[in-house]
Figure 1: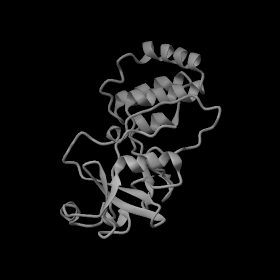
Figure 2: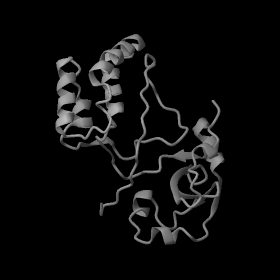
Figure 3: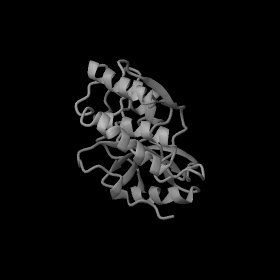
Length: 215
């Protein structure tokens, strides 16, 4: 399996401050890094973990210095395929991964379709066709918790299409839940296990925040 090209995972913003974690075989452990000009710099002298690093009040200024060069980012991406050498790790370490139930209305409907279709593409298309004349453009500008949102939820419920995603996406209350415990996320390019019968995917955009203990 070929590894990802490094340029495909880097932002276009040249002024972005990029920190992460890599596994370094030479020390047999994780090392927090600063990615600068496509190279991974060892910043473990500032903090041994990224969770501790993010607590530094002077973090942006402290990252302007010179640090030991561990090699190009591509080297660590290539290692993710082999799994037994230098490789990228998930940037978070001792932080619990939380998720907020803020779902785009269109994505929410697609999740309802996915839940009902159970991986059957033909049934999914039939459900979309059934929903279109009922909802039409009513999802445009839909405000969660509003009377209009409550009406959409009522219509879907009457159609037998109630889902917990409706409560998350257009209900009146925000939802924050634990997504994964500490040290459970994998790095970019790592191999992951999927159920052999799985062939249905519903990608959606995500906004990720690193939250310190100060909030």
